[in-house]
Length: 396
Image 1 (cartoon, helix red, strand yellow):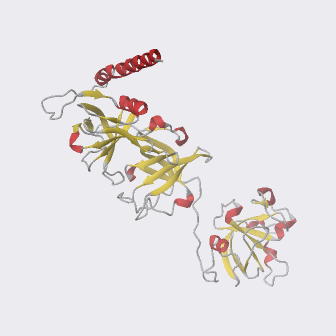
Image 2 (tube, rainbow, N blue to C red):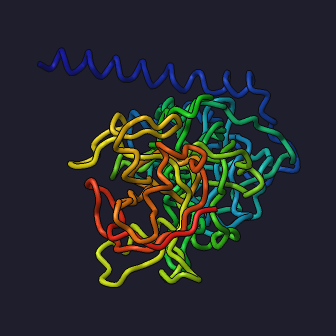
Image 3 (cartoon, rainbow, N blue to C red):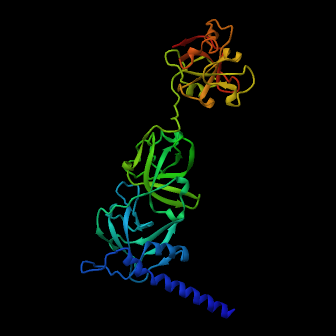
């Protein structure tokens, strides 16, 4: 047993010796500045960010008791208010968070030396940090050093990318979230990014955009379109999610048409002069009084009884050849809508005094796409939100 312990101890000693013997070599290879007369803080042992991350994985927590330094370029600062008493530095493809004792004047693009004595290498829920760091122990060596973000799919994220500057393309906020601001007044805003391929097939929606309510843009409405977004990746192990931090709204470039159509909010009061839109008609199903709704005719159900369960029971485009197409309209808030869950099914009774059934799509396919304003009882039909006792209508 003693022999095994000694053997293990020798191996550990060799690994540690090899690790630190490489530190100065890495520093020279990365062209780090050497100390000069203008430096008031000692340099001591020079670590690379890569070495610090290795130590963090090996030791967990490490307190720096002696003179030591690490160099990097600032890729995340406190300018927008979305990051507070913290910064992110990157060196090549490795990055780490600086968790500061107070706010600092660091800016994106600053090349810096961080004096590590008295600080602690640790983490916050899976994100590696240099903690207990006095901003006065940071020396700015140069400005405007550009770091290019790595472009990747959100599904390609891994632990090696934590704290790095990244860029996602073909992303958008989910339609259900777009009516919100980046953060409410009293809490963090948390919204998932949806990433699509060129054909608008959903690729992934696992990355959480987390925004402080102290961010200068917290009360701005979320981007409505699709495009690219650049920022910092962190990790939150409590719920095993990658979090994305926006540095500036100028890096949220979502101006293309989104793949997921915006949700249309309920509108109208149900009167002839102010009819419900279809969203409101769906919301007000079961209302006792007869109501008016307004929407585009987008199709017709191919059944006269039972429940609509799939698209084979619906004709969305002409020709409308089914006998059942005489008995109903499917209406929606958008003429291009093809999701039955966003539609109402309007029953066309043959005995209605208004003669509404005579406008059916089988006999009049030219009515497809027209706007229908109709009065009736908001009641489920064919298992979907609908209208029964349909009578008065205007078609244009």
